[in-house]
Image (tube, rainbow over all chains, first blue to last red; front, side):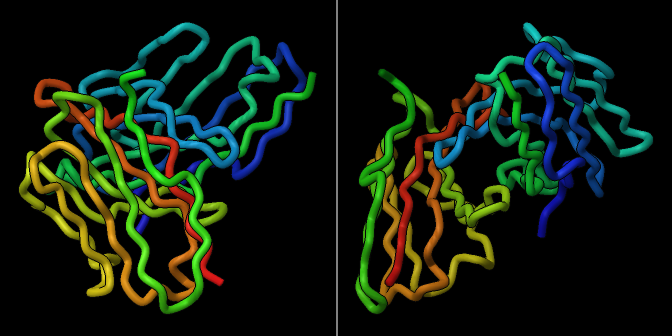
Length: 112
Length: 114
């Protein structure tokens, strides 16, 4: 069963705009991670945020975590066509950190 | 390149045949994971190795599936008597002792069962 659920399922924006994707999860977590997947390729790790952190930045990426609401958001600022990909949030199961559960992803399209 | 590699990248087989995939993790990564991903879904955990020991197996991993990591380096995933429902992308990931909670993924092997 999936732990995380991303919202929206699909997002289409113009180059230069910001993109926000949300993730909700069900159980307590030690950390939450965001991954990117280009069409038909493997996943690329973007950022990890721990349960005691509220916000984290990496380049044009900003991730927030609200453990009281069991939700996270990924913001991509000044989007580029190359950001077109699927974005997944993933959380390890609380009793088994090796079992990572992914959501179904948000498909982001950035139009040039 | 020292990333995770998988071979083959694509495999087409007929129903009932056996297939084997290989994963080479990042060198010195002691943890290795296998996932399956179907179209429009996120990866689903299949199994996990720490060194050569297979420590976790998902209920998704039926008896037709077997994974090995004999020397604690590369791993193989074999599917026996393939079924059309086995068609998916099979992803391998690895992580290190110190940064174990960050997994690095390979490009995947896309399996099509006719």
